[in-house]
Amino acid sequence: MIWGEHASRQTTLRDQATVTGIGVHSGAPVTLTIHPAEADTGILFLRTATPDRQDRELKADYRAVTATEFATVLGDRSGPAVSTTEHVLAALHGLGIDNALVEVDGAEIPIMDGSAAPFVAAIDHAGIAAQRAPRRYIQVLKPVRVGKDGCYGELRPNLRGLRIEAEIEFDHPLIGRQSCAIDVAPNVFRRELARARTFGFMRDVAKLWSAGYALGASFDNTVVVAEDRVLNPDGMRFPDEFVRHKIVDAIGDLALAGAPLLGVYRSVRGGHKLNHAVVSALMADASAWCYVEMPQPARRSARGHAELSAAFAAPAYGPDVS
Image (tube, rainbow, N blue to C red; front, side, top):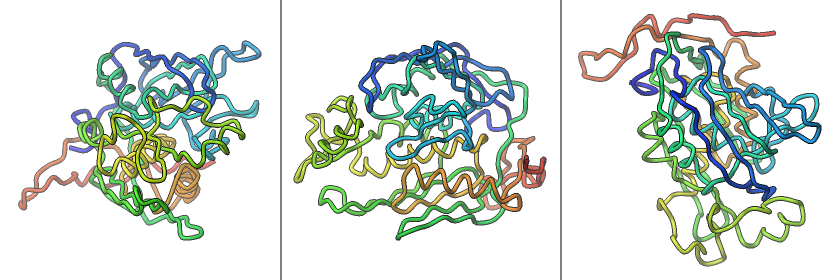
């Protein structure tokens, strides 16, 4: 069943989940608490401890993205509010959490160990609760593609859930070209994706520091790649950890569509900027998507494959176009 046992109903946390750490770019200490939220709330960020002492609430929405250079940054007319949102969003989306309030007392989500796994562990410890409200999906109706200079991202229809096909290519002997394709579901996310860490190159450190980035990066939260080896004492968690982490980032960025996607997302040499561009292009085309609900679990066909009911394949809502 797509999106786990609660595929047809919205979910939230049973209890709050708290983690503490530092920002990978700022190096500043930060505490993050994920609170349960009512049905139809969506994912909200609550930025506290702001310089002007005014709390700021932001919906996790593609229209709130203010920067995508080294992380996905959300903000509003007042400016950026919270940075590096992709890993916690990936954890929430990957586990099928529809409603939550993410409270953070700094300008950046804590990097933890560089992966989504600490957020997954905190959510699992708090527990996941099904809600009475039906879950609403975004069904991709036709291909939407954005590309430039040999890089491209594309969303295609797929009634069975979210599938991500990612390909990366780096001019480095330890990475080169890697590809990975995964059908995203909570258990798959926990097992195959959540532990994949962010990575960086030693050759770029000085440039990043001078630009004010990666001030909190270390072997504890980043896979550090030298010219001929990975410098982390514990080595790699997956042989293809680099491309798996790109899939984690994509899941977090796709969550900003506002609902689980029924589609295949293919990313070739992409990143946060491309992910955001594809989501924006999809949502801007009212003929490319619609909202649907799944009133019944998947049924089995005569061939033994899970299929969605006819009611699920039909639009339940039209696009919210302003």
